[in-house]
Image (cartoon, rainbow, N blue to C red):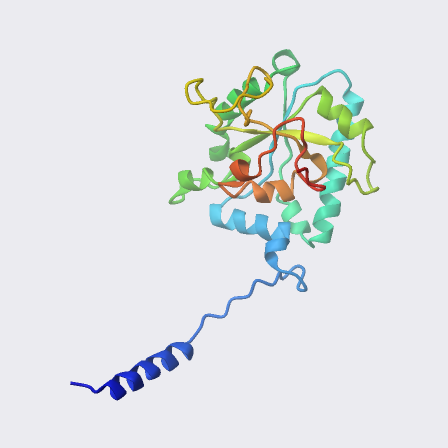
Length: 255
């Protein structure tokens, strides 16, 4: 039977062996911006999403629900593109921007003035067929990966109020915009109202919803296709970061 001294010596050798074990060298530095971590590079993060999902394209789908001014709509799309180009220039991610698909769904007859609930239902229907036509299909685990892709979890609604905020209430590119005055509306596809029996707190109704989470919120349009697309990958993002309208998410943060 080993002595106490022998046991201590063996433990010491085991600890030393563990300390000197071979390690897999991993780096978090971005190849695009080597002076920073890839976790802070939105192009790196989106590239990783595409690789993990075996997808060919990315980007939130935009629903147009205002048709009063085509010139304002064209200006919105122009500003969105300029903001995206600026962001991905900073991240040295032009090749990721090349994989972006701007999908705008417009239907004056059926979508003019449509509610977020109506957009959510249409988006759910769109998601039943779109992935098979625009992404690589047939891969193992494809259905599970779709559940994580922000493209199929959130839709973006631009209504008359949000369009006005972008075109008239905030600086135009290339001027920086830190005002949080220009925003769009992400809609969570899986959201469902809580039954009255389970509702603990009641708030002022928004589109008839009195719970805190009304299934949509406001985010700055200038970062929606990079920062918030990256955030939308996290399955806890909506629950942990939600801001009830009229608050706009983002810096400067509200208490």
